[in-house]
Length: 326
Ligand code: NAD
Image (cartoon, rainbow, N blue to C red):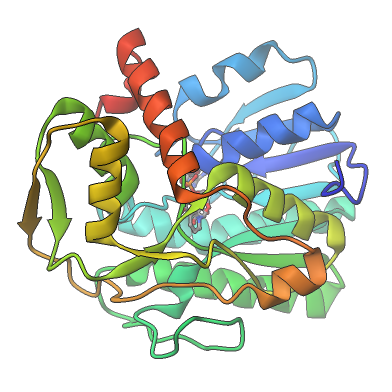
């Protein structure tokens, strides 16, 4: 695959039992890379990695990255994805989230440094806060309330970027930073509070879709396969970044809710509820840098990605598996 510009032998994926992390583990294994997944299951799910446990190249290390940890053989790639990511999770786990971004990043960086491995930090569009520049390019410094409720996530990721940069400057560690924008797809939890799984769960249950505010706030939604391809392109390229990985096609929350209803063939209605504090009004990546340096851009349309996601939620609900469970 062209995105694997390097032939990795052994990758450590922290947060590998989570939504994005588990897709990364699968993609790496499929490309012949051995994978050690380090996860404490604080927000991840065992079902996400259960099929991988049968793969001879896959190792699961159950550990909290905010405490020192080691793996049984040196990696040549460390993908640091361990962190609660949905607002519902990080508001429930504020100190855990700050620790994962600070201590967890420190430990993952130390592992990469000891092994001489490439290190890639999963940062986020949340570093831009409620942006005053639209769309957001990587030179924009952001507008974050340091004591607002979302700060535990936003500031943890901003600190993680600073730490990764300082580590690269001080020790010469091969560091890359990807700023992921909203990603969606199979293996999200129906109750994780993010818009796509919430709408899909509600539409399939015939419940009203809860749109916050007037629904005119926008997000740009990237299907997980596109995100994984972008992350692996950034890992293989050797770029320090930060580099935005996201889909520049913007949708309002109201448009998204209507699209999910249509694609799910649902009769659900729309119900307006209060908008959370510090919820960004707009969010859209400028992906010029990723296009130029990584030759990456998303390929999967919202309709196609949402169809696949709805199918997965329908299938796991039919199996009685946990997508719909809290
Ligand atoms: P997720 O909650 O599904 O996955 C996070 C994983 O990290 C879980 O398996 C969880 O158990 C694990 N984890 C959390 N704290 C840990 C700790 N201290 N030690 C070990 N494991 C720990 O979230 P996700 O959506 O897959 O996000 C993964 C990463 O990507 C996060 O770092 C997130 O900030 C970043 N990101 C995701 C999105 C998105 O839209 N999904 C957008 C921007 C950035």
